[in-house]
Length: 247
Image (cartoon, rainbow, N blue to C red; front, top):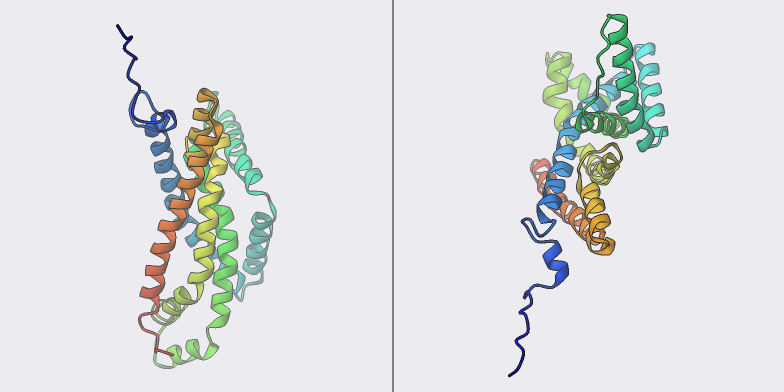
């Protein structure tokens, strides 16, 4: 009588580790993808608005605004992104706690890691975005402003109707590169406990002792996000260039 062998799973062990459910780490990795994408998408508008305002300040006729804008960009372009993250995450907590002590409160206050990551990355993004916007502003001929004023448009109307449409088209290539950099920099938030792709992959690698599988999967996920972004950016570029005359 022959012994009956125990049937083995049809999936390789590595695929079982990446599967969804209690036996695999797929759920955790996918939640990390959602956190990474959510953080990048939340940071983008903050960085764009701050960068645009800093660019306006740097080309202002007011010397103090130009100086403040120059200091801002110098600081946040010069500091390492990880150090900026630590300063926002830990420094903000200390600052709020000290302010609470002055008001007579002794409660412990902890900054949300998602918000800290969004603020820190947004400040770095805005510093570089301001340079892109500033170059775009300088690429628009001065006659565009003068022509708008000549037909009776005010400053706000000139900015909205004449300058911004051209500014967006000129700045898009540089901002697209900054978006790709932002996607990669979201991995830094893993050091302050935010469960992004890298942190979830690291936890899975330590538990299963299969670092190559999970960090390799993280690489593929970041590349997939970059590919999706490239497709979206291509669509935005075509939309922005729809009014240009064919060359």
